Length: 129
Figure 1 (spheres, rainbow, N blue to C red):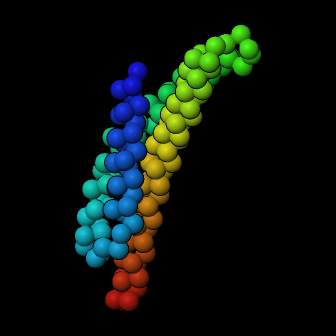
Figure 2 (spheres, helix red, strand yellow; figure 1 turned 90 degrees about the vertical axis):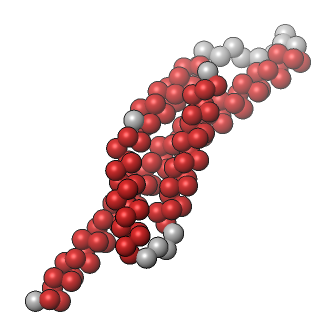
Figure 3 (tube, helix red, strand yellow; figure 1 turned 45 degrees about the vertical axis):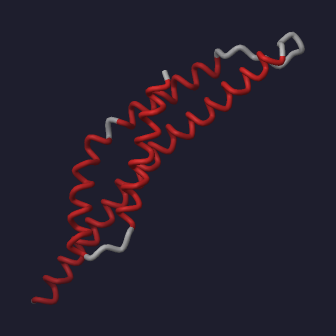
């Protein structure tokens, strides 16, 4: 089960790096090429959204059916194990949410760059007339 969370960690790191690349002040030619490349990468990255949502639903189900260890019947070791599992679940929820959020950020940044380019082209045509 740890493999899916490792994959999500790498995806979050890659998406964060791509978002940083998109927001750096590049010259127009380089920026347009980066935006074009990342726009093409967004389609395969879209498959990560259902994967993250499925993992979120799995975490929710596990949280609802987790054995509660809050009484004095539990030993110290069981209590520590319960707390660790809660912390891991919280970390994994943050991973899933950040995958979705960073994908949305990359999509919006690419969209804004394309709109800016279209407006610049319209402005250029208006000046030529």
